[in-house]
Length: 221
Image 1 (tube, helix red, strand yellow):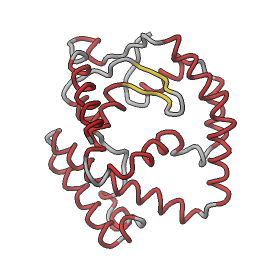
Image 2 (cartoon, helix red, strand yellow):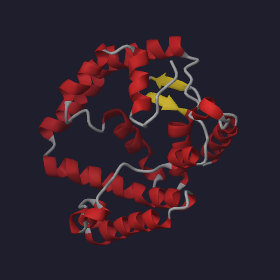
Image 3 (cartoon, one colour):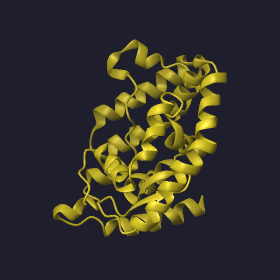
Image 4 (cartoon, helix red, strand yellow):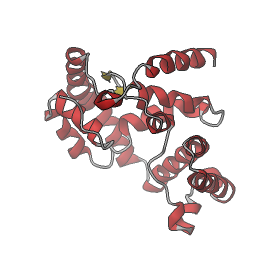
């Protein structure tokens, strides 16, 4: 816990410097481009074909679909308290209560979260892309910070990924840190292996653009 707090404090200090005005407010920089190219090649030409893809294919072929869905629902349910807190921090109590309701119903009636009872009962309670602490920092104008490609992990920015370390401080989430990293690496890899395999033909700067584009941001060239 002390290590997490120290890392979070350091990350917060660095992120404060990213919250400047104008186009630089988003912190869309790539000062480690050479390193990122090397790590990108390693991730997609070594790790993906020899480690990630075999595991993903085995997971898809040998684990029944209901079990996969249940595990995904369970780990997603553990994230709901953190999502709730982040919506409250962003001044959106309605969405905060939506995620409280999801957590309450799925934990109580959905076998601890293995069944998404809330999503089946009400379309407004369906599972959505989680709002983590990185989203809260962005809500208050904190920039992304430098972009990096990390081995095993993939795309990383201080705000989006480093900021999300705060979510692991919530007791219910501290037990699924590895599950969150696994989902970061491989959440949809088993569902569409051909599409993900095709990403290795992109250049590293193009993949960086895809990372920002998925967040509605045009990265600096």
